[in-house]
Length: 543
Image (cartoon, rainbow, N blue to C red; front, side):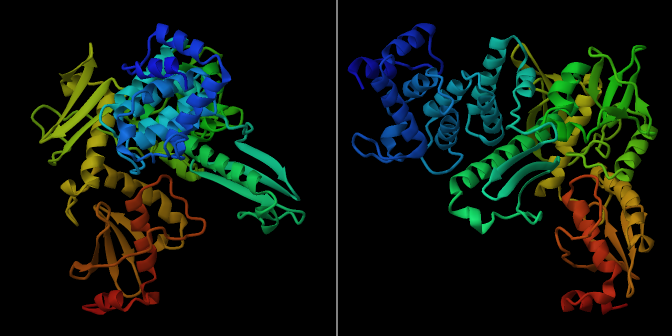
C-alpha cells in the first residue's frame, strides 16, 4: 500500500466520509494493486486470515486501535464490489461482539454499518435489517437506523418503503419455490408456509428426499453447499418479514392496491406471510372491507369474493382493536375453520384500551421495560406503571393514554403485558386470574378441541380447561398451565411433551403455553395409559 493511500485512509476520523475524501479515495484506488491491497485487508477483518504483513491474529488488541480500519472499510465499499456485503456483515457482528469471538471495536463496527448503507444492492439492506435485529452494542442500533434512513433519503422514499421494496426474492418463483437439476436429482427449495422452508431432492423414482443423496455429497459438494446457503438466506428473510409485518400492527399506514400487490401479495417471500393475513380494502364510498388474499381473489369472512380494487385504492393491515367484537369472533372462526396459518397472532391477538378514569391501570405488575416501536415514532415505558412517549423534534415527550392512537396504545400495552408475563418479575399465580393472553387461549381451545379425539372429554370453564380422564378429572389453568385434580383441587406436577405430535391437530398461532396445555390435555384424557410412576402415584393418591 502506498504511503499516500495509507495516510489518506488513516486520516478518516468521522463515521461517514466527506465527498472530498471519497473523490480522493477513488483516485488513489485507480490502480489494481491498491484496490487489491484494500480488499485483502477488509477480507482479513472478516475471515481472520493471517495478516500478509506480520501475521497478527484478529484478536490482537492492535486491531481495536488500528489506524485506518474505518478508512479501509469505506475505501473497499467505494469500489462497489457486491462481494463485500457478506464480509461487512461479518465484520459488524465481530466488531460489535455479537459472535463473542473478539474484543469489540466500535469504530470498525460503525464504519462497516455506514459503508453497508452506501450499497444499492438489495442484499445490503437485508443485511442491515438482520443487524438491527441481532446487534445490541451501545449506540450501534442508532447507526444502523441512520444508515437505512440515509439510503432511503437518497431514493426520495421513507425508510419503511425502502425496506419493503428491497426484500430479496432469492431467485424464487411467484409460488415461493426454486428448482435446480443436480446430477440425477432435482433439488427443490420451497416455502411451504409462513413458518417453513424445505429443501428436497427427487430422483428417478419420484420420491422426494429431505436429506442430501449420498451420490451427490462428494461430486456435487460445491453446488450442495451453495444451495444450503440459499436455504439459510431464505429462512432469514422469511423470519425478518414476519417480524417486520407484525411491527406494522402498531402503525396507521396504508398502500395503493397496486403497490401492495407488488411488494406484499405477489412477492415470492413476503407473499407467503401476507397471504395468510387479514387486510382491509377501501371501497369507492370510503368504507373499509376486511378480506384475505386467496389466489387472485379477495375473500371476506363470510366467503364472498370482494371486487378487485382499482390500482390506487387503499389497503391496510387489519387489526382487531379497530374491529367490532362480532367481526373479531367471525375472523377467528374463519382462521380455524380454514386451517389458515398466520405467521403471528392477528385474528387471535390480545387487544387493550385505556382504562376508564379512576380504574386500575392494566397491566399493574411491577417491572422495567423501555421499548421503541411504531417505526421509531413511539416508545412505551414501564416502571410501577405504563407510560407512552412520542418523539417530537428529536426528543421523547410523554403523551396521556387518552391521546395515544388506539393501535399504538393496544400494541404498546401488549408489549408490556407480554414482557412482564414472560419474565420472572410477573410470574402468574399458579391458579390465579387470567391475563389477556390466557383469555385468547380459552377462545382458541373452544375452537380447536371439538375437532379432536379428546373433544368430548374437554370443556373450558372459567380459568381452566377441564379434562375428564379415566381415573380422575383435571383442571388445567389457562394462564400458568398448572394442573389441579378433582376431587379436592390437589396439585398435579406433570411435564408433557413440549411439542406434542398430534397428527392433523391445527393450532392457529404459535404459543408455547397453549402447546403445553394441549399436550397436558391429550396426556390426561388417556390417564389410564400413563406409564410414568411418579405421575401415576400422584393421580392414584386420593382418587
